Image (cartoon, rainbow, N blue to C red; front, side):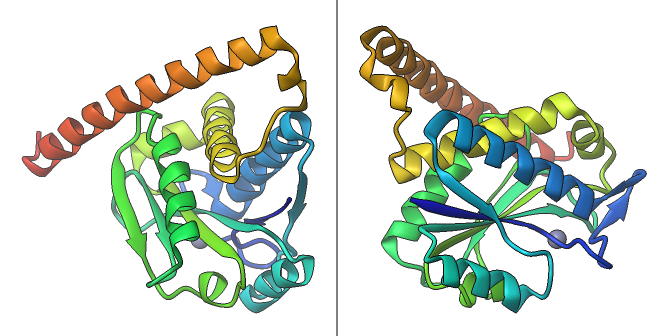
Length: 213
Ligand SMILES: [Zn+2]
C-alpha cells in the first residue's frame, strides 16, 4: 500500500496567509505528522509529493502507483471550518474513502462545510483515488487559534490518519496480540460513538450559525 501526501503550496508559493501563519508551513507540518503516524502505526509506505507545479505532484503519485493521493490545504477568504473535495463523478472507491476520512475529521470540534466535488488539477490528473482537504480558514480568528496550536494540529493529523487507515483497511501489525486487538476495538467503538455525537453537535452548530447565533 502506497500513500502519497501532498502538502499544499510551498517553495515560492506560501499559499494563503493570515494571522501570522502561512498555509504552506501548516500543510507541511500536518503532512509530516500524518506520515509519521501512518508509518509508525501501520508500517505503511507514505511519501510526500514534491512541492512543485500541481501537474508534477500528480505525476509523482502516478509514477509511485499510489493507492491514495491525499492533498492537504488550509482555506482562506472569509469562512470557517473544514471541507473535503473529490473529482466530480469520482469512482465509488474514492467516494467511500473521502466519506470515511471526512467523517473522522469532523469528530473534531470544527464546523463541517460539507463533502464537495471540484475539477481541481491534482484530483483530475491523478490516476488513483484522490482527496483534497481544506482544513479550516487561516484568516478566521477562531480557526486560526486552532491552526496555530500544535496540539490541535496533532489531533487533526490523528483523525486524518485514522480515516485513511480505516478507509484503506490498514492493520496495526500488533493487532495479532489479543489484548492490543481488544483495546483497538474499544477505541474504534468510542471513536465512532464520539463521531456520531460530534456530527449531531456539528449539525446543530451549523444550523445555529445559519441563524447568525
Ligand atoms: Zn491551498
